[in-house]
Each structure stands twice: as C-alpha cells, then as structure tokens.
Length: 300
Image 1: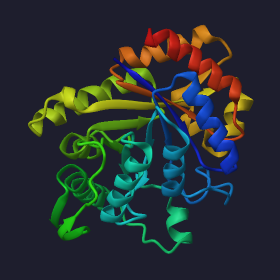
Image 2 (image 1 turned 135 degrees about the vertical axis):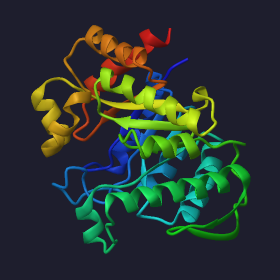
Image 3 (image 1 turned 60 degrees about the vertical axis):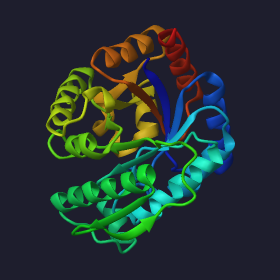
C-alpha cells in the first residue's frame, strides 16, 4: 500500500505553529510527518529557521501515530555517529516511529555562515555514501567500524538500541547515478524532491537498476517524492519565494480536490511508494485539508 506524508519546513514559523500543524496532519490521516534540515530558510531569504534534530524530537513527542522523520539531514552538518545516536533516542521518544533521512547538502551560504567547509559535489557525495554506511551499521547492527576518507568509527556502539529492530533510512536527492546508488546500497528508501511524474518514473528505473547491481531486491528500497500543494501562483511564491521555479515541476496548483487526487494518483502510477506533500510557512491550511481529502480517497 502507498503511504502519504507531510513534509514541513522549519523556516519563518513558531514552535507552537508547528505543533498545531503536526497534530492537525496526524488527525487528518497522513501516514508520516517529516521536518527538514536547514540553518536558514531554504531560499536563503531569511535567517529565521529552527534546528532539525530538536524539532524532529519535538515531532516525535507531539504525535502518537504517524511515522516521524527528517527529509533530509545534511551529511555535512553533523557526524553520522552523533546523528545515529539522536535518531535512536528519537525512536524512544516516539515509541518506535522514527525514521532518518540523509542527503549530500547543497546550501553553500549556510556552510559558509557557520564555518563548515563546502566541498565539491563529488566529495559531498562520497561523504554521504560513508555517512549512510555508518548510520546503517549503527542503527541496524548496533556497532560500526568505519575507516573511510571522511568518516571514521572504531568499535562504535549504539546503546540503547532503537525501539524498532530496523529503523528506516532514507537517502534524499535527485541524482540517478550517485545518489540512487547510495540509496540502493545503504538505504531503505530514496526520496526525490519536486519532479514531474514522468521524471519520477525514470528515477524508479534507475533505482531498480542500482538495486540489481548491489544485489538487492528492488522491492526492498522504497521510492518517495516530495510535491508542493498551492492554491495559485501567489500561494506558491509565498511559500517558496525565489525557489518557486526550482519546485514548480513538482507543484500541484489549484483548489480542487479532484485535481489533487489526480495528481497524487499520477505519482503513484509512476512508481512512488510514498508521496510527501511539502508545505512551507505561511501555512496554507486549506491546501493541507485538500491534500488530506485526496489522500483519504486514494488510501481507500
């Protein structure tokens, strides 16, 4: 069965607003809720943005049913061993509902502002690969020895263990060559942001090919996609500002539940196992309710 999530940005909003939004989404029937990992707003137009690990924990504590995740933590912002410890702790806070996502990172201005080195893309993808392997070993096996170029662990132990015997690991990003391979090698899912259904179908084929090369059953690695719900052009720009063009290919624009249902159905037909509705402040509760109606019709 496909699942449906809500992905919430942490920019230009309050903790109280986020808590209310998450509870509303859980009551509306979404299967999962995720946060993101930025130090500024994603369009870099505002400095007001909450920290991801803390809000991931708050999400776990504020809900009772939904899967709780982050799409996705930037591999360059935290050591993967520390991040795995945080994920295991969040799993205890949630009673076994936590998930974790990892990505290579792209927001160069954030790296520079906080004194974090911003390597070339190839090196960031190498780090993602090593970080994913380390997180997987710690979360799934309870111990790790890693002697990589970027990640080093020596007899590292993860205790207490997560509540779940297999805490899901998502790899985020659109790259069909390197990112999809990392997902096939060390992930339980690959999450692709803001693409059209026909492009997602190509991503599905790429992921399946990488799974075959890694000796994994393609059915063992899920494919997720983030889509935007907005009423109109003004709503899209209010949420995403200068990044509206970057997300437009994955935008569902309109106020009709029928349009929303059809759009989500096309992503499922393209091979999506999970569709995440991405909302940004100022929160559009009408779009959330419309998405929830579409999700309810497809889930039954």
